[in-house]
Amino acid sequence: MVLTPEEWVRQHFIYFLIEEKKYPISLIAIEKQLTINNLKKRSDILVFNTDGKPEIIVECKAPSIKITQDAFDQIARYNLKLKANYLIVTNGLEHFYCKMDFKKETYVFLKTIPDYK
Image (cartoon, rainbow, N blue to C red; front, side):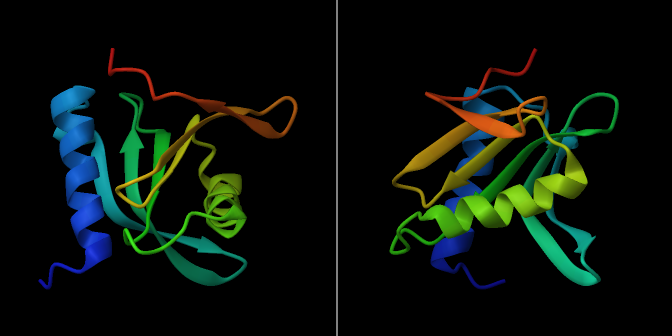
């Protein structure tokens, strides 16, 4: 496998989830396929809760890619299907953490995500 800039970001973020936030590696999926509007898409990182439901979706961009509204729109489209509680967009330099508010159909920005309980 070639270590592209995006893959470098993904590997480092997985390390952060496991080492810093204590998420079990067994709950983390990489490039999980999903179908949206009959199109096959892949989430970069998907973290499940112990019930097997999506908890966190992470969208990784290369460090040279500026994080824009498009990245949030992409991950929000994925979340219409997945219904995860947290959305993260990172380029390895900037990280944006959001908690979903399903009642208001919006998300709230956080400083970080909670540690695994």
